[in-house]
Image 1: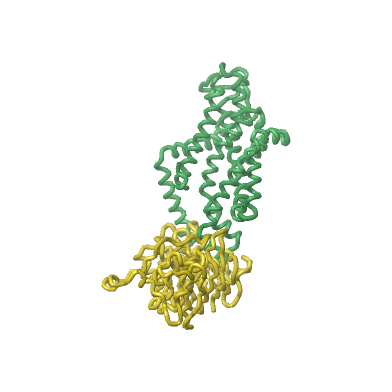
Image 2: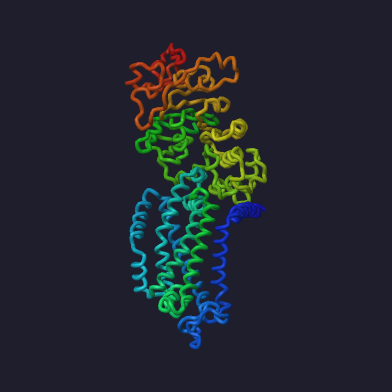
Length: 288
Length: 322
């Protein structure tokens, strides 16, 4: 009975947040774009043809009913490649962010909670990480494990790590001063219990917002690395790889550059608008 | 003695929040610790609960020295004491339901399983006057007074020997203050716990306290039975505090002689030499600026005060000075 009641209380909170969110046009536009992007990534590859199927009779063909977005220099359907590229982008964005959160949140939690002796060490290490140029690191990683989606996810995850650690730690420093944490100590709670049941849940909002900032950054990062040949390798379809090809035919087949460029822009825009909206709803303190 | 504090010192860097404070609380006794903001009274409460580490001195809980116990060693002793916090908005975990908040001490000390805890939470909520449907609510759905009742329920659910109440009503609306104060009074009589009641408002402890200790800049300047303190305050600071509290009878209120203190509380970073109160005391003379008066029970009747002007046959009268 109580479990149900608890869930009811949470559901009420969610409904209220949703009502506040729904009223704003920009975050809703962001939500629509993000949902569209995720649908494209998940369902798109099921309905389009093989992104690697070549048709030498129709190379560099402009958009037509047969090829909605035209074809590239090898006669491959651009729409199929966009859909498969969305999958790569989604993977790179989500996996790298999950990786950064999985590693960064625990580090930020203990650094902030054990402020006296762990925090200085962790924060100096974070400073070192921040000083490391992202592209140099990505090149190094590609050289070691070979250019691949795995390398992209590792490089992007690593580059997000400092931000996640800093945000978590900052929140922990604020939350640990709250009276309810002192009350938990007085209740007889141990550190682990306090960290996971008191501190972490009250740090969640800014981290959710951070994820909506990190995912589009990672999507751009994946495209950048793939464009430079450090990420996903042809013939696998990726928006970055498509841009590399399109560059050579910019005057003959401009649509080849327009589609992936537009997709990157829309996906990024969608996540950013969604993130702004979530921040306003979840974390009213940090309004701009 | 449930609580014995001897010569407690707590410094935060340069700030000497508590600077040599001693007090005792007996079984079932309520001690009102009164002082202005910045006097260090909240720090005393935090030290007693070991929520902050004392710089020096000793704290004994039921005869056991807890001053230097590790956090782990403290944990079982926390069954015997708890705290009610001032701010009802930040003292309850926003992610917990009321049932979880009140049940937490039971579960942490493993005195009940989930089912048993649920029953004891019900009983406790009833005691503090909260309806059962509150148990599934979250703190933000409750009013300030209701939240403070939840804080009270959490503090009392283990039936502790000692409760530290740190300004438990000063953040509440005046209309709600009285009902929460009455509740604390009733629960104290009912359950018989000892209580360190911290407040800046003498009138709040007038009904509740058995004894009163007045604090100024990290030290106790006067302590004694409640009736004594209210009827015959000895320290000029206590006299000033009492004269600042309004009297309900307008005729008496008009006739009263007020002691108006000039200036602010000096900084605890660099407390005044001699008597700490001399910078604001209307009666201060040369010795007050150089020699610190000890807290002495001049008349031997359990009513010590720290003032040079108190002698066996004379009590200073701050109101007489104009």
